[in-house]
Length: 270
Length: 270
DNA sequence: AGTTGTTGTGATTAATCGGGTTACAGCGCT
DNA sequence: AGCGCTGTAACCCGATTAATCACAACAACT
Image (cartoon, rainbow over all chains, first blue to last red; front, side):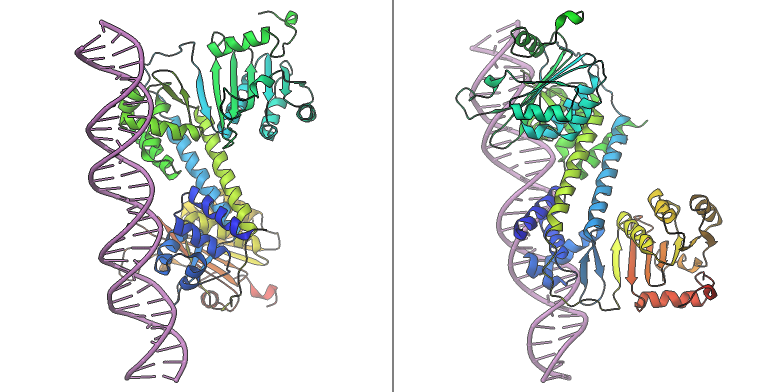
């Protein structure tokens, strides 16, 4: 196991969680020794000794380290479980506060809305997955889903699909036979198929290859299409809703041409 | 309802969660209008229009807003539930990454340890509560707990106490009759008492009044004492373990003098 | 006691970042 | 052409943070 790499990873994550570089380095350093003085910590972490004290103070205020008030002072980190528990608690309570503050605000509008042609863009796999799940949950009749990458078939998504009402047609496709198998195992009642969308996979107008992420069509009136940047693995999506929406209209045309799978239309109206 | 106050609260919390001021203001602004352009957003939030674009980009990358790529661009926030769900997911995955990175590191030691006289200091109510719960969970024979402030009797703590093994004596005290009542309701099997620790409450050597927070003694060999800064409501604690620990010895002397409640010693050895 | 290396605080400098402003090029409209 | 609006990019400056330095207090050892 590459300890150095993990140390760097931990320091990075702690900074993403709001700590400063010195604070992060000191905390990680402390987790590697059961107890230590400022001097020793400074040697391990390359944080200037005189700055260790400041860093420790804020770590202590965050509940991540304990201080022995002797001379010289000794520091130690709380146990890993205790630390993550504390952090989780802090972020949870912040998100709760945010939720409470915002739910009692929501108005100022007086704005025209609903140009039927709206097409929205989003990015970030977690956000796109959230939206995917939400749309699946709102379905009344039909869900058509094409998955382009194995990593997108998360358990949360599988649950959302399996929770869908019995009434709803589930058509789930993928680019490869093996992924279709996998889907059949996870969501047995869905009709699976190998997508007819290879054209989405090719080189994109001369630039680098862009991979298809997902394609979701709900009740033939909401659609979400995402692609994955091959370089960064970042997922980006566009999303439209409403029967008259431009994107949605295009999707229906694709279906009419057989490029998307079609449920037998004679069984229902509309 | 004071909308302005809640808007400020939301902006503060978002910044604690890592967003910059402009980003926070833009997001909160967007939650107040179903959809809007940069100009309008700038008017609502007082963020310079030319900077709205930057802020929106990072919000989009965080999965908090969607962008309509038209001219002019239109922005909208994802639903509040979606936003909090996304945020929670992001922080959870970060804490997980941290946990994984650190659990495969833990060593460099070669350090002497365990001077029996160790006394450690910690601060932050959540961290102190975590440690309290942990200590209660590690008890084998006896838990003596004195609560100085109503707000410290959280449900997590109550659960920890109720989960304690039947074998374990639970002695729980408080400074006021009413709080003892409350404790008796929450943790029926505990023996309650009104503390004999009023002296901890008085003026602290001429400075302002410092309030006692909690006092926890587990198996007569681990002790935790906390106080609450009257100004900031910050909780600070000292903590010692080991039968020979200085703090613990003092605690035993207090008990011998009747300043802490004593379980009938004839019923067990030691 | 005197010497020496360690320890904690505070101030100081240098670099980076974030908030705030301005300049400007492209567009649609009259 | 003239105008206002849109989006990009560059810039300034104050605040924060990384990094150094000076120093007084202290512990340990001779």
